Length: 451
Image (cartoon, rainbow, N blue to C red; front, side):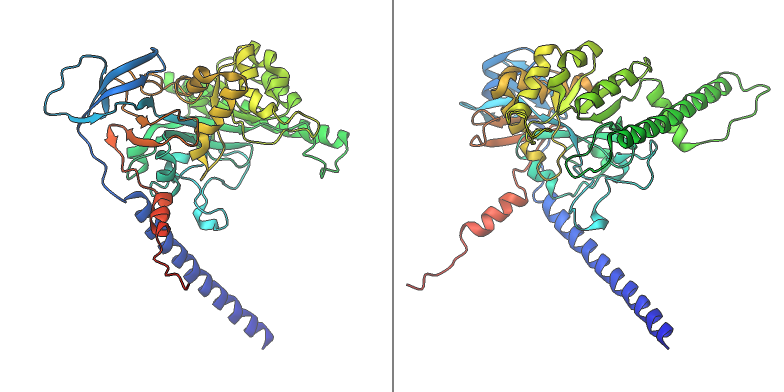
């Protein structure tokens, strides 16, 4: 009898779980639809006149004109001939910037951290080079409009679990499907570097144990890499001349590594501590045909010269606490500037989801603490585009490039400045988000005074 009751309880629990999951999905779909499709974006021809244009690639143009024709920037300069086909936007007293890029997020992959069915940034298993973030992007994420109305028009979104997490994707923050948002579906393979350091004060492992585990993890990584190299050579030989050869068995994980080994897709290595950074650099030098990018590098300032000598770019944030208790609190803010001074190309990567909207302020801190405003602007625009090989499309205001740009009433690195208009791929985006909706809802609640 007890067994029957237990079985009945299990069945009912499964039943209620399915109902709960279904309700959560319906609520999310409804909330997402409301969040993304608040108003229709405008598309066509636009003439932005009298603006102070911060081109990034070619200085600043006062009282300039930018013409947008469809998805592209058609003209940048002065004295343009503007026909009646163009919708004029008088930007007198305003500043025009290229759209900002956050080079490391989980935007579109995670919605509500506490609701498992809304999270798609992690997979089971340690080695998943075949996993593609592109296929999991949720275009109706409520965090996307919140981010883009702050001037961030495109981001790298990447899976984060295991050793090789999967392929990151570069997406525009406007569109109704991953296909319509993708700039580069496979933008980079994410590698979480094995650490030879203790995790913190709570980590009670001995130094010998830490080193032993690091060597085991590195051995496992090297064995997977060598297997991928062998598979690539075997398949390449068959593709070059299949005669008198048996076709190799397909392996989707190894197949996904081929575009990495050829250098077509870079490897983004997340690594923070000094010795780990040095170990990672030494490892990359054993694979000269592969493109590598360092990410995180919280203690990069300690080994800035070594990073510069390696030629590797770095994706960095500024809003985090120092790795060591005795470090100066300013080090996270100073890290981008110290790396740049040593000769490292840096770009901003927040590592956030709902707070990707703060990417401009990461750059602002970096500008104030040594990087300077001009280099900070590059770090969140052109440098980021160059690191991921899309500088022909994004990163600056130039004729022929994709029309990702925004108008601000002041310095966009300062929180009090207002972003007044955003264009993504030529679409004039509604300046509406979940945050503006809540502001409008609660600004005047109609409460009557009882006095």
